[in-house]
Image (cartoon, rainbow, N blue to C red):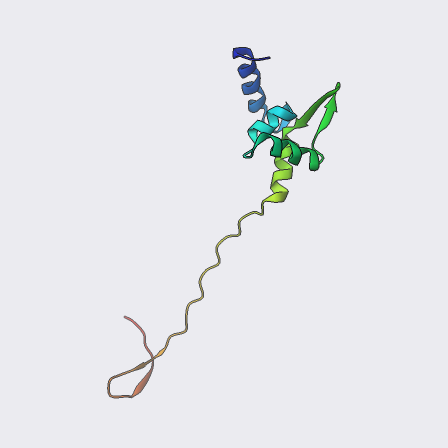
Length: 101
């Protein structure tokens, strides 16, 4: 299938989200890598299924697989505040920790 009818089918499948079933070739085009590399990755991950003799993938399984490959970014840790340094006035006397305000 090609042309306008095909694009409508593809759009409908994308709207299905995780429930969409794509051919291996269609799924490969949606991944951010060259199609042969994407096809090999889908096969190596065991995501390719047979549906009436056709090789397909369930998009939700692809998304789950991608989640296992990319760690969730950790929240940035708050920076440790350096301890206050004693204030030494020009005369050389220490007067404890300097406090602003």
